[in-house]
Image (tube, rainbow, N blue to C red; front, top):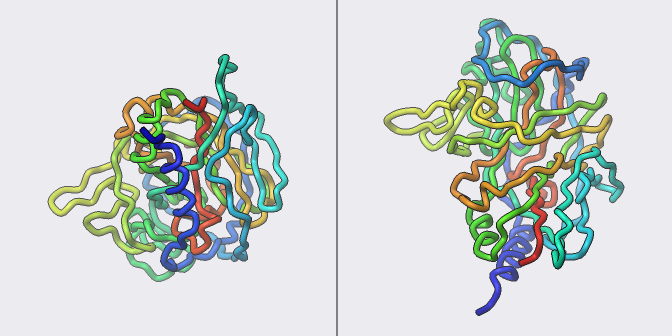
Length: 332
């Protein structure tokens, strides 16, 4: 009987070679916000407030191209087994976290990089007084509040925590079929890290990364009102007959459990890959159907007026700039 491992690796190599259809890019805003990264207490989920949004300033960033990533590798010391941030020029920095596998006798450490299957941005509130409208980047003039819009086909957007209720978060999901194939290979325990390609003006910031519990639709809009089959900040799944709301009433963040953080170093140029700290995905390997992905967001006690990185999505025209999940495990 042939091993499923070659099929998994070859399928991902083929995926990297395919470019997605061109998406309408939303330019990076300037967001000349100060960042106060001092946090106290614990992250809690609460319903959003109803105060007005602040004003944000637009800006731009240039695109770039990086070398193709390996789909899989084997060896005693796989790359990024210490939470390494890998930049577009090949340099790297460590965030101090550990994704090291246990030193089990006979373990041949390996990893595979899974491409994103679905992703979207979610925006709380609006940019106009009373939380109305959505004058955010190239969406200027939209009468609908940002919280009602779907961003399932947005190529790039900057996350930010503005005044009032305005806040942008990013969710990404990976193929349950890929996880099922790993399970069928005999992989029962693995450490993963989320890799995102970003542009990040200074200063540095630490962001929350949560494992989403609710099933959700990616959607097919680029900053227009959500329709059946889409999602938005208030609704995980817009259905024909009834909308399925996010648990916790705080977008995907409210429906997630924090598993790690994403440290965004100061002044990263566009086309820079950064990775989260490592975390276990054993529960997903045991039951792949539970794998609803992750949400990258601010912490609830981060200061209003906090800017974050611009994130390149799976719809980016350059396939080498798209997010992926690096999964470390002992080769079966």
